[in-house]
Image (cartoon, rainbow, N blue to C red; front, side):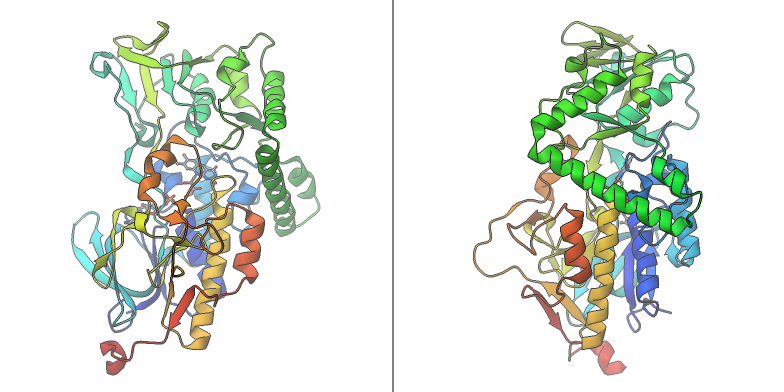
Length: 498
Ligand SMILES: Cc1cc2nc3c(=O)[nH]c(=O)nc-3n(C[C@H](O)[C@H](O)[C@H](O)COP(=O)(O)OP(=O)(O)OC[C@H]3O[C@@H](n4cnc5c(N)ncnc54)[C@H](O)[C@@H]3O)c2cc1C
């Protein structure tokens, strides 16, 4: 059996979400002879797309870029609901023979690199029985996501005890929640809040979004009109390739436009919001953020569903500071009262990378915050370890696709040259560093000090540009000056036994 100390796995993947399954499929396609296993802490695959169950759960990226490069998204629905995304990723896992390589209820609690054996010793705890075991692997790919599954970010509000109704965090949506005919307050201004508003408004008496600061919201077509036409006469693979290319260009164009011409971008977004709401709607109160477009993640709403709910009167927005919860809802510092039977705290995620497991190199603990990222996928001084952090300014998966392609190139290179380990070492001397993510979102800012850092120049930067990453990951040098390779250790007990 692979995974023992005598026959370590070639690659061990932590997490069976979109990234872990994508990585396993890419390895299966490019390096079919490599032995691999995925360890998943939960009893199901899908990660985010299984965990979140709130009404209306959907992507805000289009599926042509959020889907895998090797597996076409076959519908013309560009923005898909959570169930469809989950079905797509589970079908893909089946189709590429990855499903049978997932070990469910296997939570990684420690990963220890042993240079003497050029191998990871990974301690796993069974999520149900608590029984611990050890698996050995030559390469570790951490696809454990970026947030805590057990806890969301949930600030305390004064007066919570007084509130007579239910308080719910969207990460833990009760399956049996009956909200028909109820008055609901949704606290937050991010993607979750703007998704919940129209979805809840369909059944609730009224939904009020309570936000401290507005967010940029843009309406995007739920269906891709070009894909709809092309599907009539082109095979799925072609339609997918064309639509994907087009969406990548669109996302990039819009991001660069927002960064270079923030005032023009502001006017463009404002004009779009204006056209979607009644003439007397106070858009400068509720849709006019104090920062520039794309300084924080933009919210996309399919076919303007949020604006329709607001125009129809079943939903409304209150912008301001919450003073306290009362027995009957929320009181703002302005004195305004928001009546509610249910309060949803769409206040965000608790960011956590490297999925709650400890990492050591030859017994020395690895503090993520003291490490630099190499090409946005490895940590300096940590051999044979890579991780999945996707884009925040376009589809997460675009980056994961590129870095897993690169991982295959790297493993192939090591095999061809007889290397057992690869470690990125930061250059000698002072290297100016900066936070990993220059992103204003609250949940990133709360966590950024605990994340690895990035340097000022290639290959020590975390790039958020698909085009420069594509050049780097698909064609860039593997054996650059900062990457150090080593042959199998001569004093290895395993090699001696073999
Ligand atoms: C509600 C919501 C909507 C989103 N919408 C979009 C979108 O439209 N576009 C976009 O680009 N991004 C979106 N994102 C970001 C999204 O999380 C990613 O795009 C993507 O789904 C992340 O996949 P992942 O596999 O990297 O992580 P996850 O989906 O978080 O999966 C990680 C997996 O690792 C497992 N795991 C964690 N720790 C361990 C451990 N120690 N041992 C074993 N297993 C472990 C978890 O159980 C989980 O199954 C959204 C996020 C949320 C929360």
